[in-house]
Length: 83
Image (cartoon, rainbow, N blue to C red; front, side, top):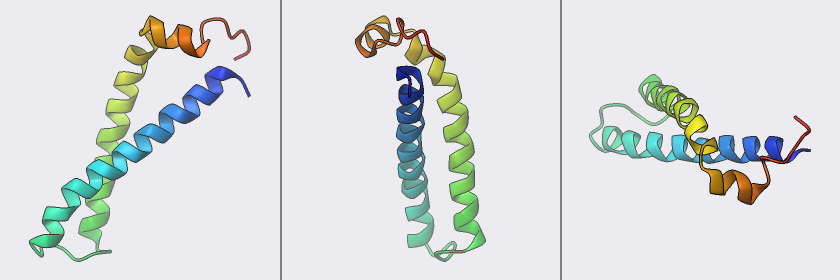
């Protein structure tokens, strides 16, 4: 497995954690206010919308992360010839 592949897996993993955290933070007030019940379509919709937002932000941020020269150099991503 190349360094670029490992970096990609780590990047996606971080965004999955961010998605879950944001989804949970948005979900909690709805559950506390009895707007919907756990396991309902409302909760699924909340997490689906959080996933879409997280996906869009993750795609938008990815090129910016790769522009951090110190990060790319520290991880050795600039010298990795195997894609």
